[in-house]
Image (cartoon, rainbow, N blue to C red; front, side):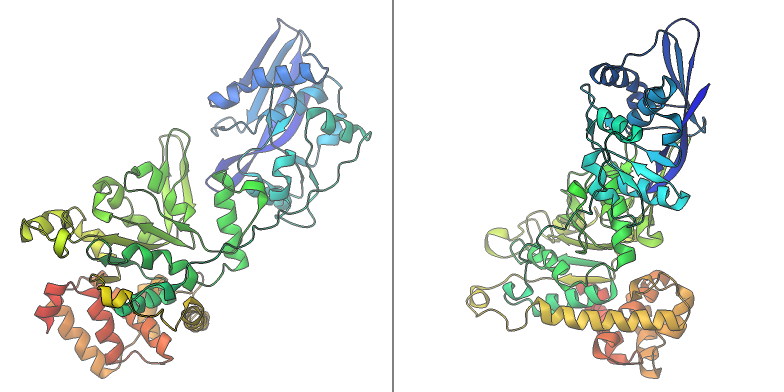
Length: 509
């Protein structure tokens, strides 16, 4: 007789159905797990054996075979422990075999029979609800799984004994409640930044349209300070966005206590991060920083210090909004629609004045900035030189306009963009930065004066086709902030000023 238990295997944030088939047959004592298991799944034999003994059960001296179907799908992770254990318990009559039908099961076993948390409980709960199943998961994952649906039947035991008693009707376990979000910490405010009015304006435009932004300036100019205040200008996550972000964090094991928040992600990896850390991957593929920044901000400080391989790996996700990890036997894709904000010094010496002045001339700056490839720079919508802040600026009183006032203008501009995208039939392209080229003619058509300026500037600045389209998108965002229906010359002039490097600005003038 074969006992069947349903569980899942993760491909990106998708939870694919897997059947755990357990057979206890006559023969020499053995315990085999087949179906492309990885090391963690193969080691489930010892964890399951020890947990059953600790719970007062012993494996029969027979041949035990566990098949994970479909057999050609790689199985990774420790969450197969609990379905294997429950399949064995049903096969030896410790729990009713029909009690497991209609449930998706996942969980890791400790040697004493208790259940420990696993990554991916939320995607598994969403998949179980879509299949019309309930969910059996560890108690530590119950608050996370409860967010999938109020109608989902969830059983979240602490141990094998508890789940056995529940399935036999001896003990009834209450449905877990969704985890409450943490109290919001005091947000960093834009009014803390003294001076840098042009940089604040660029930050507002980037927030309104979802544009990529590059700050270049000497040490201490406030580049990191400005970037860290970008989340305070962004609207909260919409419900659909919140679910996507939560599922990625769940697969990465970062959804502690099942507490969801509508704050947009802000990821700031160190410049020593590898390509796998940024894009995702590894022996057991996991989401990288760009996937964890989905619908949020990825901040790369000291941009030229990142490895060239890691930086160039960002080029495709910036265009496609997806991080693809390809292996010989499978392919994983994570959503990665993020906003890139970067900061850098003009040269390795600092490129400022006084103690940060460069004594090696223009060659130092040229060599340092050459670490960033041209194709990556071409994907930066706004490039801004941030000058050093003087002592007189620091002595000024705080700015009267705080983040809340700027965030209100950003929200108003984003609503205009969403309404325009809906009017022209675009799905999933609410922000100007994500507009397809086919929609630019209708969404960002400049007036006659703007068209002449754009043509002259494109020749003077030698804009690529991508650069040309991105200037139009930034100008559309500036017009939205002004409440203008048409992209005018003044909007294009400001967008071109943010696009050009200082030497190119002088050439264009």
